[in-house]
Length: 254
Length: 67
Image (cartoon, rainbow over all chains, first blue to last red; front, side):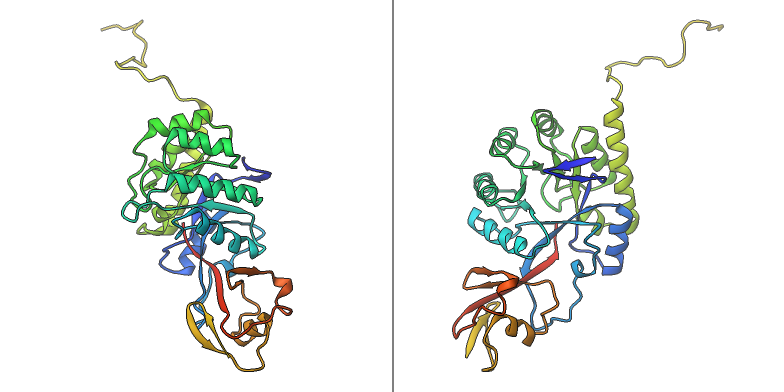
């Protein structure tokens, strides 16, 4: 079970809700992924087209927990404004702090992320910052009192997978709060790898929505997260530099 | 009177005097929508009491797909 603040979740897969080809595909993908926590962005309503379908309004909110992000924010103040708007919906008290510091890489601004996290904690939010894989920054965020750390595996939407497992492992080992690997996951092997490293969860979006068959990929991601977690709990065999025969050397008759 | 609604000038008829009536005029009363008036968030319980005045800046935001 994944525990974030006082909330307990059976699924360790957190799913983004952007860029699906259709609502029908998205609904099926969300269902088969068994993800409970779903991320959303906060944007201006297209009030001149109010009849547009809205995915959130079709969702069973008893089965899902909303994790609004502060995407679009470049400063802590902007992130706080977005987070407060999200909370005013009365539908959520968690927030994914996302303060981007660079348009080309979409890497998070560490200083603004830290400031935003501090401000949102003071406002009583359950705070989950999206951060780089910087080990010291993760510790600083934890010291502030954030409820989970969400280091990126690689840049958002890149699908490059886990490019620095060494840092991720150090963040996981030092952390007293859940670590959710967020961003950059490209395929099921990446999700399984994150879980094998000991991550408490994985947050992904484009890896599913951008797959040729998003529904099948959502299922694959669920299985990968489960497999990776079980592998972590089982404790993998020690790695060796040279071979060690599995068949006995005694009783050989040739 | 006219307000700035989601960044665009928007003419209001004289019978729209509060946030609840504004949402009703846009058929948004039953939608998941969050109201910000001059950068202050308006709680749902205050919609009927919150006046809308000429020149007000109103943002109506909602949740969209995102990662």
